[in-house]
Structure formats: structure tokens, C-alpha cells
Amino acid sequence: TRTPVNVTVTGAAGQIGYALLFRIASGHLLGPDVPVNLRLLEITPALKAAEGTAMELDDCAFPLLRGIEITDDANVAFDGANVALLVGARPRTKGMERGDLLSANGGIFKPQGKAINDNAADDIKVLVVGNPANTNALIAQASAPDVPAERFTAMTRLDHNRAISQLAKKTGAAVSDIKRLTIWGNHSATQYPDIFHAEIAGKNAAEVVADEQWLADAFIPTVAKRGAAIIEARGASSAASAANAAIDHVHTWVNGTAEGDWTSMGIPSDGSYGVPEGLISSFPVTVKDGKYSIVQDLDINEFSRKRIDASVKELTEERDAVRELGLI
Ligand code: NAI
Image 1: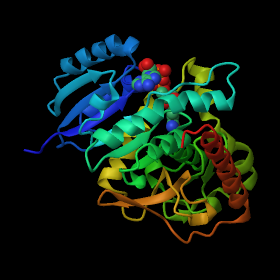
Image 2: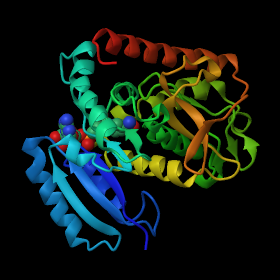
Image 3: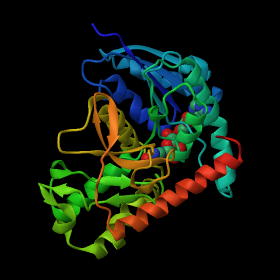
């Protein structure tokens, strides 16, 4: 029998946590034959709620769930962690400036990065979901000098999935026929969903759509502002779809991309496509044997170039701001 994989989830008592934990425990994160130990990290006032969720996890009698530990101590939560899903973050509240938001999140992701550095397993893989995800990932990474930098990733898979779904609706294609879609840049309103290299049932997606105005005025803003539209409709932010995307991100990172397809992940740039080295930016990636690589040599047209550059500029500004705050 396989040794259980230790999966740490922060913000476990929150909305995304509630939609995420049951799917991890039922085998959707890693695979149907991989047992897991769950480690739930919460702030002290939310421990009781996390215990309630753990009671429900028990009550599912998941065959793959070998243990649940609940703690408010990051050193305990990340002890021996193989996978870490950093979901808990400080949301932007009314009147909060960007600097306030970044420093509040620095107060969370800096100590968590250090706890990962000091306690996690050698094969640790980190996914940051909590916003601003790319920059929070950069902060955690900077506090974990002993962990290879490429193990820190940020989630743009929800944007990727949203874009596939919108494209399927527009063209009448099945979701499963759409391949090679890319989200570039920051997980924010500046992100750029790129269909110029995407395929719909083997045909170039941009040629199938043949409507640049729809791209610019409908598709891109719909994908970029989907989070706000969900809040407006549901009265609460996207949780189940965010949890689903976190599952997809880690599942792909561990189990690989399908032949002929790729996915989108926020990862440390190696300088590809003019994205400054070290920025955690979304790229088209393929994954094999648990390692991702940026898809190289794609032609970037002018339409795409200016949008990628705008998102990367925002990431650079966020990095400069956390540098000034001494967080990295
Ligand atoms: P939530 O507010 O329901 O839950 C957050 C939880 O984190 C709370 O239970 C809170 O107690 C906990 N928490 C706060 N500080 C913590 C700390 N230092 N250590 C451990 N836990 C801590 O929020 P929700 O809806 O679950 O969303 C979580 C985050 O995910 C937000 O930042 C949200 O913006 C982000 N998000 C990111 C998406 C993406 O595509 N990257 C998509 C949707 C949401």
C-alpha cells in the first residue's frame, strides 16, 4: 500500500476550504489510489469551525482519508507537507489601499513561507490561491530559500477554465474539444486569455471565432471580470469553481498534461516571452513527471503582446511594492 501524501490546506474553514477538502479526501486531487493525510491551518478563532468540517469529513468515511490534523501553528501544519494549498488570505476591504492589502498579506505569507521552508517535505509543491495570488506566492517563495523556487505557483486555472467555457459557449463546441488555451500574466483584471494558439476540434480557435471585436469587447472582459459577476449574482465570491480549479491545478502538476494540450499556471518566469525573470506570472505550460515547462516559441501577435505587457507591468509594480515593504 502507498504511504499517504500529506496535504496542507490553509484557510480550511473558509468558503473555498469547504468546497475543496471533500474532493481532496475523495481522491480528486492526486488520484483514485493515493491515500491522504489532511492538515488544516486556520487562525485561532476559526479552529472550531474547522473542527466542524473535520467532523463532516469523518462522516463521509472516505477510504483514502487516513488522518486529519487541525492547527493554528504553521510549523505543525506544514510538517512533512508534500502539497500545500495556501487559500487563507486577507481580503481587500473598503478603503484599503494596495499597500495595506500587500502588507496584510505579507503578514500571512511570509511566516507561512518560512514554515514551509523549515518543515515541509523535500518534494513540497505549493499552490497559492489566496489573493493577490501571484504576489502572495512571491512573498512565500522569498521566505523559503531552501525550497526550489519553481515549487511556488499561483492559481490561474480558474481563469483558464472560465475562458474555455466561454469559448465553448460562443462556438457551440464541447469543452472537451478545446485545447491549448492560455492565460497570461496576473490573476487579476489585467490577465490575458489568449485563444490565438487554442484549438477547437483541431482547428485554430481564433480562425473559428473570426471576430476580433468579440474577443476584445466580450470574451476578454467576461473572463477577467467573472469573479465580480459571480459576487453580483450569488452574493458571495466563487468558491466551488475556485476549489475545482485548485484541484485541477495540482492534479495536472502531479499527473501531467494530456498529449497535444497544455494548461495555464502562475509560475516563476525564466525570462520567456519577455516576462522578467522571477516574476510569478501565468504561462502556457506542459507537465510531465511532476515537472512543468513553459511552452516555447509561440508567435505573439500585436493584439496579444500589448495585453501580456500590461499584465506583466502590473505584476512588476506589485513586486516593487512588496520589495519596498521589505516583504521579499
Ligand atoms: P473566506 O474568507 O471564506 O476564507 C478564508 C479563510 O482563511 C478564513 O476561514 C480565515 O479564517 C482563513 N485565514 C485567514 N488568515 C489565515 C492565516 N493566516 N492562516 C490560516 N488561515 C487563515 O475566503 P474564500 O472564499 O475561501 O477565499 C479565500 C481566498 O481565495 C481569497 O483571498 C480569495 O480572494 C481567493 N480566491 C482566489 C481565486 C483564484 O482564482 N486565484 C478564486 C477565488 C478566490
